[in-house]
Picture 1 (cartoon, rainbow over the protein chains, first blue to last red):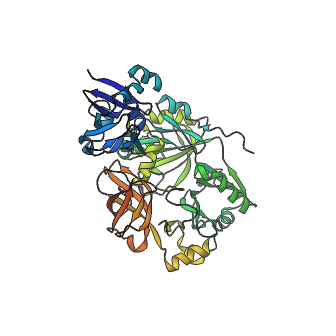
Picture 2: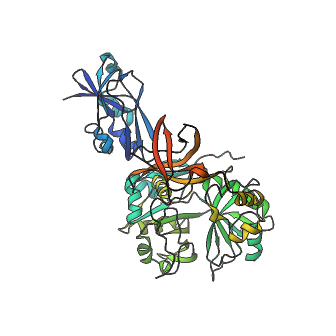
Picture 3: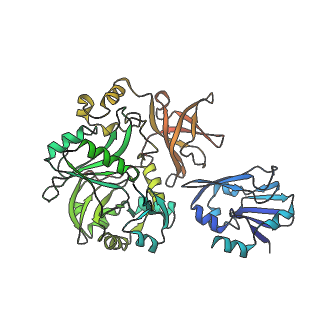
Length: 122
Length: 378
C-alpha cells in the first residue's frame, strides 16, 4: 500500500519508494469537471515545491497544477495525451500526472494525510 | 443607491438544488453552472432535449402607442427592420452607440395576434446589460411605456426532441416556426412561447409567471428526453453554433460589420440609415471593415481560449481569440476571434499563442456544427 498525502491546493503525492506520484485529488477533478486536455511537463526537469508544473483544462477553464514537492521529474503519464478523461475517471490511480524523484523527503511532512485532507474539503 | 447587492435566486432555484445543480453567481443571479457535467449535458441537448433556466435575461416590454409608431421610434435606436415585423415575429438586433459600437445584442418580438398583449413589443436583452439597456430605451422612448418586467421566468427547451416533448403538452410545436412567438398554454399554464434559442438546435423559449414556472419545469423534466442543463453547456453549445456572446465576441468598440453580424442590420436600413451609429456603420459598409470575427479550429487537443493572441509568420500579433473551448461534438479546439480581413478567408492558416506555445489551425466556416432550425411547418 502506498502512502498518500495531499496539499491544500488539492494535489496529491503517492509515495512509491524514493519517488512521488503526483496528480489531483478526486475532489479536485469533481470540481474541475470534464477534463479535455492535460499539459504535461518534461521528463528530466528539476522542479521546486510550489512550481507550476502542469495545466489541466476542462471545457470551462484552465487550472494550474503546483507541485507539492521538489525533485526531478522521472516520468509523465503519456496516456493522458490521448485520454485526458482518466483524470476524471480515476484521479488518484490511472489519472496520475507525473512522477518525481524526491529531493527533500521532509516536505512530505508539511502535507496532509487523508483524514486531514477530508476535513479540509468538507 | 443599490445597497442590496445580494445575488438573486430565480423561481427555479430550489429545483436546481434538488436536481444536483452546482450553483454559481452569474450576473447578479445564482444559477447552475452544471448538473451531471458539461460534456454530457452538451451532448444531451444535441441528441435529445435540455432545459435551461434563463430567467436572468432582461425582459423589457414597450407599449403606449400603435405598432408603427413604436417601430419607428425603435428604429431610431437600432438597425433592424422593425416596421416589417409581422405579429408574432421576432428578430435579432443590436443597440449601437454613436461610433457604431455594439452596446448590447437582443431579440425583439412583436406581440402575437389575437391576444390582449398583441400591441406590446417585447425585447429580451443580456442580464449584465439590462439596466443600461432599460435606461437607453426609457430615455430615448420617453413617449412610450418601457418596463423591465419582473415576476416572469424564462426557460428554454432545446434539442431535436424539444418539439416532440412540447407537443405532448401544447399545440405550439405545430403552430410556430423558427423566430415566431405566440401566447399559448403549455401543460395548462399560460405562457408566451417562441421557437428560438441559443444552441443551434430546434427549441422553444418560454416566458411564464414565476409562480407557475417550477410546476411547468417539473412537468417538462419528468419527460424521458429532458435533462436540466447548466450555464457551462449553454456556453459551449452557443459557441459550436457560432453564436456571439456579448461582452466577449462583441463589445462597445466593435461594430456589427466587423462582428460579422451584418444580418442584424435590415436591408432597407443599410441604404436609409436613421439609427444611432448609422453614420459610422454605413461608412464601414461602404469601405469595408479592417477586421472580421471568424471561426477557427486548431490542431491537437489543447483548448485555445478567450484572450489568446493570434500571430502571423513573423510572430507579430494580428488578432485575438474572444471565445474558445474544446468542442464536445467535434472533440477539437474551436474558437472565435478577430483577424485582419486579408487573413480571414475560410481555409487561411492561423497560429495562436497559448502559454507562449504556438498552436496551429485554420479559419473555418461557422457554425461549427449544423444548425437545426425549423423554418417551415410540415
